[in-house]
Length: 579
Image: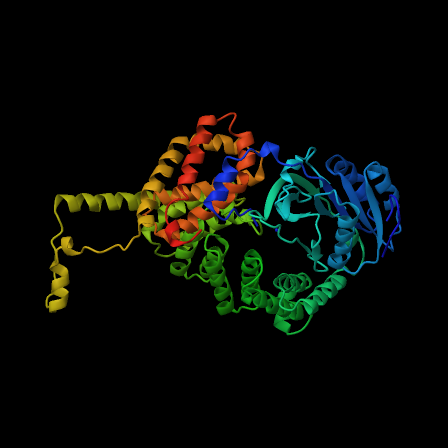
């Protein structure tokens, strides 16, 4: 590795306290120190991508460093000089030893050569900025890291990548593949990481995709990382995925025959996904998805239903707000024609709102699949529970507009509407009869003393101590105030949601709806309250500057009410020390 002189050489912002929340709430962010950004790339034969991406990066950066593989054969160096030659930077020739070790050398060189750069940004050559102007006041000196958004090539998905680091000693890139960026904490730091308004488009056809034998090299890097980092959850997870991708064209047949690539790779994939599911450290969304994939392998290929149900149940326990695990269990029982088991799980799946998560969001499941499966479970049940027809009707109404199986959905919906109306009429008739002639209470013929006493005991004597703390008693009034604001202002909120382009702020709206759901449910205890409210507060906190800038001028009264209603949510249950 050498330098050529001159020009060639995935959390979440967590404030942690009400004081930080209020300080951010009323802070004047316009006076923040403007950051200086260093672009950091590692490339080999990427001239085509660089010719597209670098002109878009040039207006956004202040410095650059590009690691050029010592086996590079195209004119990448010429392209770099063409588009970035007017900006201070270096090309550094490197001997490639996997992403993490090689990129760490670039990070260290950037810290040494460009000390005036406050932040470095790791980017692949095919990451092309969509953002045309970057507000560098967002590059905060007190944040160790920032995230930016990456839009997939087809444009359908967006993920957040935490590849912006403070350009200070200690920053590094870890792992040879599926690398992650780490940065040391800043003394006196209260906020570790935030999302900035930068979005890039990812393109396919990078060097790794174009070169042959990619799978073998990929597996080699993963196992080398695992040797150096035993029980590393991220590496274990991706080894499982690598084996699943190499299962071949006939994995189910290979499993039945007891040999072949599918037999070997599916068993290895299951081993590593189970291993990842048992590792409690690391990113919980990867652990959750490993449980889903292990269950899928057991169900689809191995007919091991005890394994599949067990893994999916663990997924529902790890993240009960996501519909996937509930859906898979319900679908299993529906396909097995055990409809009484299927309906409760599918009912749970269709009633869940899509939660704000950064990875593995299955849009088709939330839009269509769970709803059509609920309809199928009710439609084919020989004696379906009448009370579930209302749920099925609502699901099929949504499926009618989201699912391609329109004829099937239409037929099931027509029946669900008839059955739901008949069940409602029956219940109203029973209620009318009950009012006309009160039901006579019938005791058992020969009740024992304890049973008789229970039957005739007046309800008024059943007074119980709720044991609620003062914090819990404040929950009801706080939620009532929030519910009143939401009900009165929901139309304005929807209007802003449609117009608002900031992705981090958009994530607030489903979280707000979740808090509102508490206001129309039985009053929760402190644990339930904080579990529902804290994610919203964690989203609201770092989004304040963006919301304040884009919403307040147009909706000043609404913005003030929003602030007040949200600040009040911090008060209940804090005496329990759960913040």
